Amino acid sequence: TPPCPPDPLVLQAPARALLEGDTVTLRCRGSGNKSVTGVSFYHDERKLQGLRDGAELSLSPLQLHHSGRYRCRGRV
Image 1 (cartoon, rainbow, N blue to C red):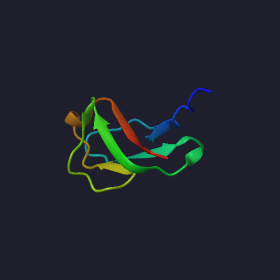
Image 2 (cartoon, one colour):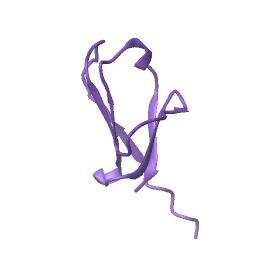
Image 3 (cartoon, rainbow, N blue to C red):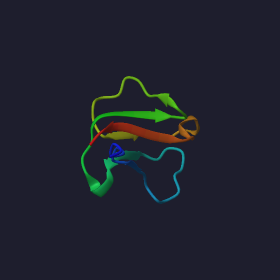
Image 4 (cartoon, helix red, strand yellow):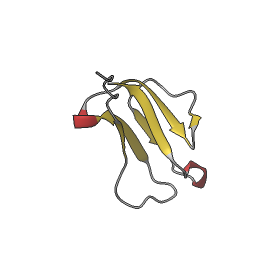
């Protein structure tokens, strides 16, 4: 039998439009809202360094250089 694919991770972000100066929190969750450990966040494919351990990434105040694609990796 083929190996089971890893549980997909979901990066939860606000659905509303974001403006400079806002505070935004991105949450890394497993499918079915499972908690995730060992989380790393990536911005435009670059790993973000110096983050405290946890499944949330807060950007505050939001600035233009924060724009781009975000993703997370971790263990479910």
